[in-house]
Length: 480
Image (tube, rainbow, N blue to C red; front, side, top):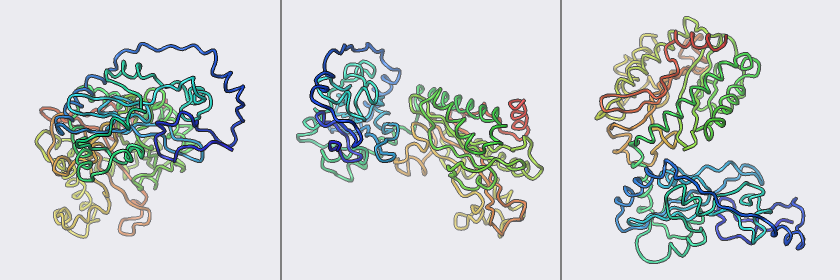
């Protein structure tokens, strides 16, 4: 029988004598354990400072200024169970990484005044069985974790052992914790719901405007995403043979090869699946004559993600009806992008796009009232076929800055350095009896990642074609 393991979802910070094992692991006799602790070389790597270190230091200074004299605690989180004894690949909490640059599990950033300390779990010691028995942290099971010195060298930040954290969090003074990330940390500091929520809000709002380094990361994520879309079209014969799964797998290969991962589960919606906004099963066929909606984004190695959607004709050419609908959505997107500029309300892109779509639906004879009546906030009947908002912030999270106050985000104004999506769509459900038969089962969305500049905007994902003619030419050139 295996030795007891920490409760699911908790950080194993002070349990070196209890390796995480499983019931099917072989027994470890004392002779074997003693022999395994002998004869190992050791070395520490001299690591250069990562590019994120300097911007992260500036971010910590801004965070400290928002809460003078207070202790701020931002955990990275720990592994999450996928099934039984297997975990998902670790991805740190966004706020933790934003302010520290750290991507190792179980670490905790503590910011207080002008000082910041990262409490981290280093590589496993040869003085216990952890390094050869622990499935989660043992070097022979999970790979070499960096030492405290290596983390410090690479991040330009003071780093101490995670075991010192409980003592560091004792004492008087206000302490705010980013809650819900680490059960262990949540248990070390008594909660103050209002104070902790304010920390989460400020940590979100400080990410609204991207610095120059972040914009470079987002551009890289968009560029790799473009390659992933190109890969998918080049393999169209296999797409037709294997369906939605093939595109999902092809794009994931590019994301892992050049980035860290996908930024979110890829949406590959062939035919009627395109009318399900978050279709991530990706189990259907890709059928000639249909459209396929691809909503996919690469998360780069600094954890910034793209979020791009294209709707493609499976045959490589749009039918007349498909082209008419596609061009309507494109016109709405172009109106939305044109509305993005400093000083404009965040909702400007949405309002501009919906104006175009509502009048388009009126022209198709689908609205029960005029377009202007439908656009009234007390009506919005046009939204039966548009369903979602047109924009959200983008950055380390695909839906970035989600805990910002409404007046700073959804009800706020755009500023230079913000990055947001513009992604209008039309969706006609297969069982919608209020639309003609030929429209049922068609879904179209076009999405790009837009940087607010001093005098307007820049499309970070412009390398992917958008017009119906350009999409057809692009598909034809890649499939030859």
